[in-house]
Length: 334
Ligand SMILES: NC(=O)c1ccc[n+]([C@@H]2O[C@H](COP(=O)([O-])OP(=O)(O)OC[C@H]3O[C@@H](n4cnc5c(N)ncnc54)[C@H](O)[C@@H]3O)[C@@H](O)[C@H]2O)c1
Ligand SMILES: O[C@H]1[C@H](O)[C@@H](O)[C@H](O)[C@@H](O)[C@H]1O
Image (cartoon, rainbow, N blue to C red; front, side, top):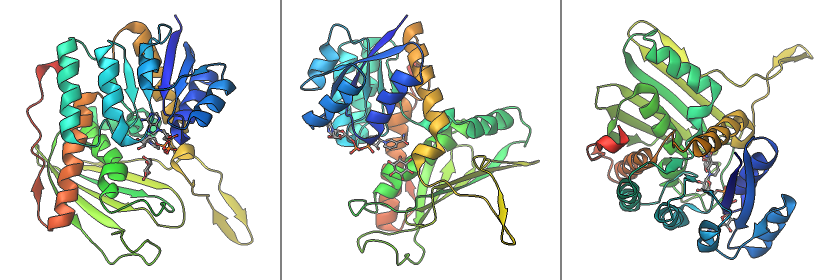
């Protein structure tokens, strides 16, 4: 069976997913594309033999679109996802599911009213081979009960539009989801420490930030977010258990020895670092749509991540430890 996909948002990652659906993933075909930049939608649609449509309503309603991929700006996600759920179509939504926890809950409620899961959220770390191996080791009990997780999320630079709250909402949201998934545990509180700021930043930005989380089970998590580190895209994660540790491997890169030195390149952006994860993520999404059974991170995970990142931003503002206040998980999302 071929899954016919309609794509909303053909920017950096939307265009990349369209390429992936067309040339990497099997069992899918992009039929329709929309973007508020109509010229962009037309160019991207044309490059894969799809048609450009005026808006998300037309894409979701198209008779030849079985499933929808949302890769517009975060603030536009909720309305497109709600419309897809109302139409009963499976929808893959890039992170964040929505920019407010209230909107995430609207999606959670709509999906439950529909009666079965339709939504997958783009938390691609869960599809990265290194993270998957960490999860296997932790679940097998090989390091004993996990006590601590140490993470670092470093970007070489960010644009001037990036502001301090985005360190949680846009960047650490990946670690927030990954840690909940790795530990099968929920994050109950957040705190933020603010080191001396790097000089390589815009004046309005607190960079770096050290986020401290506590889980319901009592594990402690620290996440360094440093989005102007200059040297590359560097993702680190180590879980420490009662009897051992497990650490995320760096992506395989050739070690070059020359002029009396040995050096290993550091990747420069998320596209390169998580290529395999994106490929596996979108393939598994297409397979789940074909099988009629949504899987992977869902709207509940999108809601929990929104509550935790909101608490983190409040912790940064207030200097206090802030409870995440996540509701009890409905059986529907067990
Ligand atoms: N999973 C990841 O690692 C990852 C990486 C990058 C971006 N993202 C997420 O993907 C989303 C897009 O990011 P990007 O870097 O591609 O941004 P981008 O600005 O390059 O692209 C977004 C596109 O959406 C279009 N758009 C905005 N509102 C729209 C609407 N209402 N209807 C149709 N099109 C609309 C814009 O014109 C633009 O072309 C963001 O939510 C971002 O957080 C996820
Ligand atoms: O939207 C991007 C993306 O999610 C990247 O994976 C992350 O490293 C960046 O910090 C963020 O701005």
